[in-house]
Image (cartoon, rainbow, N blue to C red):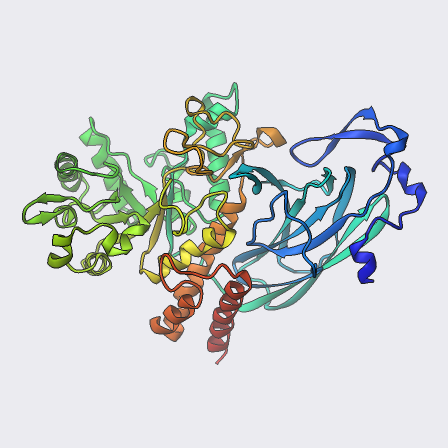
Length: 549
């Protein structure tokens, strides 16, 4: 059986050559969604069946186009889920010659089991390789190009009301009507549910004008609906965009503000209209849940005394007109305002939602020698702000790069996901990211499906900054396609929620020790995915055991 698994197509009957793979049938051209269209005939002499290699991988490791099969390929995967949780795995395929149509299907799905979604994983160039990132709904058929690995991502989502227990799924690869390989996924559902109301807040930029750039001819109400579709795609991955789909004063916004998955939304500062701002504030005050999620974002990244003075003026007006709405200020420096006051001291009492860049939690990155002598560590000062009633988030953007974890296409999947473990370890309650769809044609990004060097004005070797989504136009979707990185973000947020549950049941010291098994600091961590998943399983097992007593 192992020999058959490794040399899958070598024993195919000659009759299979007329089944649409090569030879007798027309050749096919690839489309982005994995379907095929008929084109020219393939010469008969090219109709030689070649072996297809295939294997399974966890849902974290990125399988590049260039990657070949391992020495011990797996055909069975075990996945552990909480209720209201999602996890994935991948099936990859590679052949020395082109195959026009490979069928991959689920042949057994148990009743009342976690929901299965299948995505084709597209690749794009980044850093000398072709990395996986765009997702599109999988049609059931896959085209293989010569010496080019292709993958399907399987996502299993457990409903909050599902029964705990074990569920077995079976899949098959069919070549020309003959099953050449079978696969098994065992999904184990713990007997506890992650909360509907997330404790990990998110705030991600979503820009209507860039949606319009990638959906030519769309405007007005149609563009407004596209924004709703994009917003909902982010929400499916437990991510809240900066701006609600509707004006806060519009009754249609109420359902979103009340949705437990929506953890934050930006309030317009209404710079020339105090009366309108007061009206918005009064509506927010009518519902404490809405008010707690609301925030202003008046100024981005102050870096000088002049910008800090500007921030102070903006905060004075906002606190006077809407005193209970949080004021968010992302920042990455700690400049001295004057001889007695540094930036953090100056911002205290003005900023109420602190949002430092992640690398600031290594105090020496941002303190001068004098500041090191004068002030507590950065983490201690953020803890003081939380104790005083402020909120503390953090963010990343086109930096920091390695060895810090970020959301770059070319970074390992474990780095994208581990960022949220580090967030929890540093007692940071929210994550802000400046863009989910920064596709600026003036900066050279005219096709995100093939070019993720989105910030060429800053770096031509940073891939994916400000872009976690893909426009659905190449795959005939009136909305967005998610990304491999967005899946890691959702999984990281769900890990964060599991740590919160574990802390309540087992204590903070226990959780810190578990996280340290993977990442003892921002720049020290293990890239061993098996170790990562074993620690996650240990946390889930401990929660389930504690709750069963």
